[in-house]
Image (cartoon, rainbow, N blue to C red):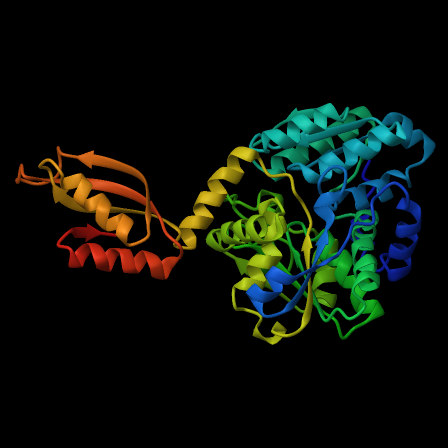
Length: 412
């Protein structure tokens, strides 16, 4: 049985539902801080505040909706248990609060779900089933389990109780930053943006509410073009929490009604935003949580310069292995890590002379690999593939110029 009742839910979710949800989950879900960020303000030209929902116990905002939905189950439903499909954060929130409320939780994850999220779900007491190569396949299996085992199906975003729970973040933002002029939130299934937009626009219509989704998985943008939610072909993205493949009908309707605009963020923009948050805010977040900063840094919102803007840093469950790759990708996007090929003398002292020029330019060599087999007919020269660390893109270009002026052939 499906607890979402999403067919007529758009008219059922209101500010009153969000206010009630806040009262219902009080004490079970943290009221996370929303401090001002001086470095991000300097970086973007806006007065930036960050809503730190990655500080929730399971590392994301999803606890809000999960607890709100679980607390509205009947006694029979609580005893029998619930089932859902999720890439991780909704599953984590449901598993954690299911454990606190003594409600059995079954989670169906697509096989590509991050290991850190599936293992944490198991540690929190949930039954985890890896099934399918897409969210659609995982969802179909979860629905079949709901029917065969009489479990209550709780959708991760296309559910009025979930949307109302996520909207409590909007209420907190309005209280914590009373002068807020714009809020930026990520869009995957749409539950967070829908809840925040509904709450904020109902209370203070003048506040702009923007969404940002991964360009590799433009579920909302595709739905706008199609006139309604539609399936988007799976495509790998750093923002795995946004890779749902199909925006929810309820969030879609609410976002269309209340949000101002939804834009796309590229993988390069997302990786650079993750890097900026690590360096400037000392915040380790996943790609989805970095999307609001990626949007603000993209130049797509010139109207927000000088304005008070809240970025929803909504999740911190990034795989440490992925984080390392993302940081390197961000450094490369930033022009601070680069790889190029140079032709140098293969005689004694050739490499030393090359390294001296790089050092004198203020760059740091991270790795050098010789390629003698494919360096051309001259046995007096060799190609070297060099990875260097530089201050920024301008510094990198200066390094290339210095090497060429010294007589080296450089191929970027």
